Length: 273
Image (tube, rainbow, N blue to C red):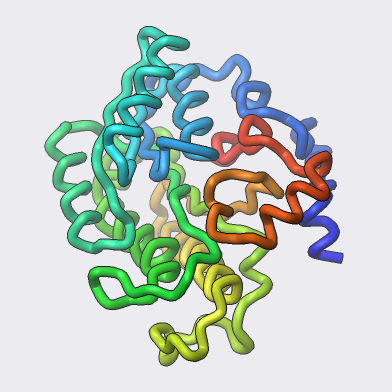
């Protein structure tokens, strides 16, 4: 049943009036975000690009955290053509590298900007076994360790912004229903790097479970401390983006059931942000 609901994207939100077909533009219609600054990781394609575009359209100052700066600049220029007064910065970030995460945080702090919103969107899916530059299984390093470290290093700025502005801060982890489909027992901390036991999809689910647990525990701690910041994880729905480039199964599934899938315009991390 969970897989069928995942595939059909049949959930709706009666209290908000929005459905799985609602677009980010529809969800944010009438919102003035000109007093907000947001970081969006993986903002040079797919869900991240659409999130950055709509946030900029609504007036937010957007920092695009991207692995490919040239690609990020192309997206920035495209957004500026649509919203010529958009405030956008492009900074390099490779979430698979802890050194790159620290470098990004230093570059962001040098801009002297406040930080209201952090959207941990970037990720990889179903790739062949590999290790990061830090010696950690690549999907877990990119999808969980990198965003965890990024959030930790930016939390002081977010707390200061929330306190001085009086505006509730938002941390959003892009997770997936795939968090339900991982190794038996959940996250295998003692076997992360065992190539012989590696399953591309199970490892992806493991990393997404990490995103969910991270948001849940962070939300608890922030509430306990009385900090005016929320932390949430979300499943974006069944969307075909370039994250599936390593997965023959999802390429085949999309071709057979294309009419059931959403496009990037119908994904709303900005709804939570």
